Amino acid sequence: MSLAPDVHPGPGRSVGSPAATAPLLEVSGLKAYYQMRFFGISREVRAVDDVTFTIRRNEIYGLAGESSSGKSTLIKTIARAIRPPLNVVGGTVAFTFEDGRQDIYAMSPAQVAAIRWSRLSYVTQGSMNVLNPVRRIRSTFVDFAARHLGGSRRDFLTTVERHLGRLSLDPRVLDAYPHELSGGMRQRLTIALATICRPEFIIADEPTTALDVVVQKDVLAMLREVQQEMGSSILFVTHDMAVHANLTDRLGIMYAGRLVEEGPTRKVFQRPLHPYTAHLIASLPRLGDDMRKTGLPGAPPSLADPPTGCRFHPRCPSAVGLCREASPPMEELEPGHRVACHVAKAHAEGRRLS
Ligand SMILES: Nc1ncnc2c1ncn2[C@@H]1O[C@H](COP(=O)(O)OP(=O)(O)OP(=O)(O)O)[C@@H](O)[C@H]1O
Image (cartoon, rainbow, N blue to C red):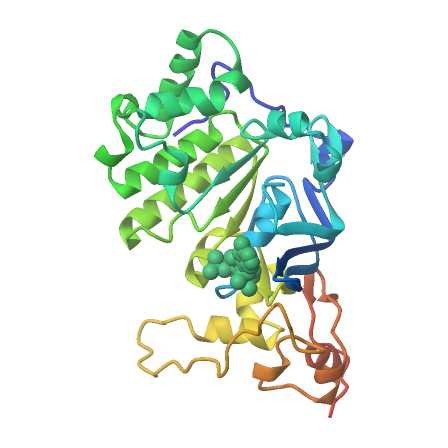
């Protein structure tokens, strides 16, 4: 499959310019809370609480963590796809696209609309959310992408057909309604839709979770090929650690609204530094291993009233007194490998905590 520029060149990927060397996404101290008021009582769910990380050009960054850890809230906030009661209460989200660096929350609504799908696109779990059930696939492509690519409708549809062909999709699917297609086909179409404008940054939110394993493998291979050919960056969100092991270049682990570990995916799997990451990896099934996997005791905390200190301490097998008292900052303990854990830090420095 070749995705070399065809009818439209898409955003350039010039090497050597400041834009080419800067991180594509910089998230700094980001806080996004659901702020609600019921019968005069305020309630605040701190779903994303002081998250800092960057994503480079041309990399697939994975985000993992169990349900309710804040993954969806984080990516909605990064894409500025938020509405009340979710509010950004601190921090910044900046993209350095080919035309320069911009804080997405300093942009006007018109500027944000202009980068959606063309530079920043979104692939979601429920493909039916994007594919309008009462419109043929062709109309959905026109609705989402025609204005970004410009030109006549005929030229646009020729571009769409060529793009589908390159992704091994039969252009006749453009005549279909979503319900006439399989789940796998619909998901491949959402990837085609998200990449038709050759975006620099793609957010993929659990795009394969609803698919069976064989179709899942196909869709993931397609996504990787698209990414490699276009040189785009992908933020790939799933709780499925096996998918991260096979797909992502770097991996961030979220727990209770915070990033607790980040590093090259291979390193994180080989030597997890945070006890929560170690648990996630240990619970993966392995061929020939017939030991029963034991779950982590306890449940994730309420983000309306998170525990003091390290939010993982009530469930952590290694917790000491300090973990109950002070929130551990994210620190680089090995090159490119960051972790927020007092015990891991002390271990790396050859100290013992009690
Ligand atoms: N609309 C909302 N109003 C109030 N709280 C919300 C809302 N949506 C999510 N939350 C809360 O925010 C926290 C983070 O949820 P979020 O959906 O971001 O987690 P997640 O890691 O994406 O989980 P999942 O994998 O189940 O989608 C949870 O405590 C959740 O209950």
